[in-house]
Length: 247
Image 1 (cartoon, helix red, strand yellow):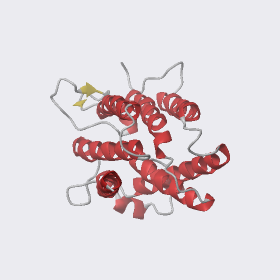
Image 2 (image 1 turned 180 degrees about the vertical axis):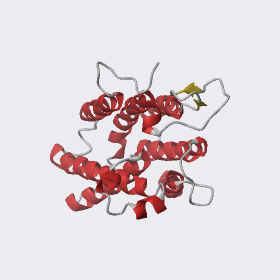
Image 3 (image 1 turned 135 degrees about the vertical axis):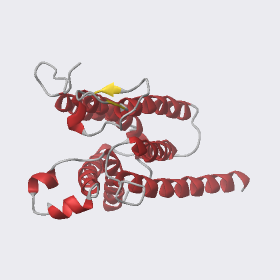
């Protein structure tokens, strides 16, 4: 296999990123709980999520190499290039919460996004893998049996495939939680975010990106902040649920 692996002459990243957005949105429309939030308010939530994700994915990317970003602060091509999933997720979260305050909606809406997001991310990572070295989402050199040569003679961790496998198992686990109706409204999204952020914090130790923040890179710092936030949130919700049971 040669990387990038073009499909009918089209770049794989373009194909699979487009499919990720299209299929993810279709899954959201099909699986969302229509009783949780009316359609006229859903539109604003989706707009908030989209804008927040677009901004967050860019801003976090700029912190990957702060010195380079400062050097290119007036280079629009550099500033427009690159994005991060973690930044998109956290930015999307802020965008949704902002939109909910704007429309006066207090109920959780995150559970409806879990499966569309996870499946969309899996599809998108296929494009990242088939793009090879140009995508900069591969891992460091390895002698593991999983190592893949992306075209320069060096076997590297296919971290894109690791993520797809992780997300597949996460989807199965969360589907079981949903089917058994465990927890509370919003728990699915909280578990999804917490699990994925922990995964990203760990997997980025085997990625060749700059680690300018002591031992960590920009993704790990953002993931760590998100992990602390969701641990606190889940603990708080769990304590509240126990209080209600014993009341």
